[in-house]
Length: 399
Ligand code: ADP
Ligand code: MG
Image 1 (cartoon, rainbow, N blue to C red):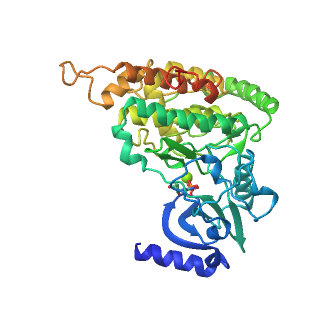
Image 2: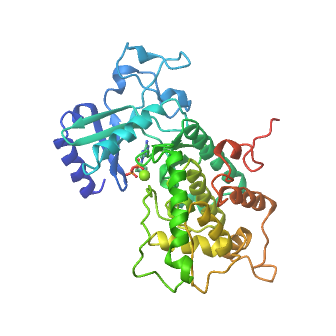
Image 3: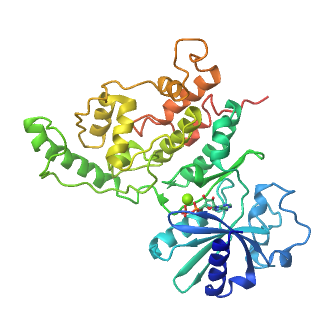
């Protein structure tokens, strides 16, 4: 272990009363935007069981751990004895996070307790202003180590796992809001993945009541029609004195993975924003480029998306959310490019000769058609997680 990490772990153990007695910190495994995550050994593990080997049994039901021995939680929903993990991930949430945000994350994890494809919450502790969440440690492979070398059948397995998780989360009316490779821990050997990080997740419809939103959209339409742009036509660049009301909406998430409706600050965001982000992961894998989108801000992100989809479709998309899109950037065409072109260019396979001009295989084409459904600009037309599992790309045919 790196001496700096060792020192950080020692400090954590010294300052968080009682943690030493319960866990042995092994290493620091993650440093995200909102937390530091450590791998640790649960020292009370032996007190609960002795015949249990985490590596041997991969049954996902076995994660549910009893908080108290002999308590009512001793058996799971299937009537089987619950087991606890010997190795855990301790998520130390930064003290600068708001209490509401922390509570939200823990509450949603609690609600998703029975979803096998969501990493469950074992327990949580608070010591003054420091909150830690304890999750079973899930062994996974770093996305950067495998995304370039996946066979189409492996891509299918990966997305079957991801969309199974999304379907379960969405069925509970929860939006994850931050779907990206580091929040989907995938074990390439076991072909299983779990969703983590519900720090930005929210319940559908909590952002704003739909009926109110509709009113706001109408109001904006009226105001836009009276605005400068509508009267004198598009000007070049940004207006210096924009008298139009600014828009506010939840824009949480990670650069490059935000759906167009998030970038356009739509106030009525649905679970479909997660489908878009999953699509960005698929595009990354198919094009072997990570990160695929690499913008510094939302405007740049819009430029990237508009370059692919073309101004015509993006204008319609903007209108759908009660805004207007204007651009004078000469490189953005009105029709954009097909995903097939984008993928072939990324792979340097769009040339004329036999070597550089290998077209998409039938498997890649199927993946691309599925991607088109995830990248539907209109969230209402975009495929849902449940539908995705029935798509030719993901469906498992009964033998
Ligand atoms: P943040 O909100 O800071 O992004 P995450 O919950 O995404 O926190 O965790 C950060 C990283 O820690 C993850 O990307 C992953 O590498 C690691 N991690 C989180 N939970 C687990 C777990 N249960 N098992 C193994 N590694 C984990
Ligand atoms: Mg994360």
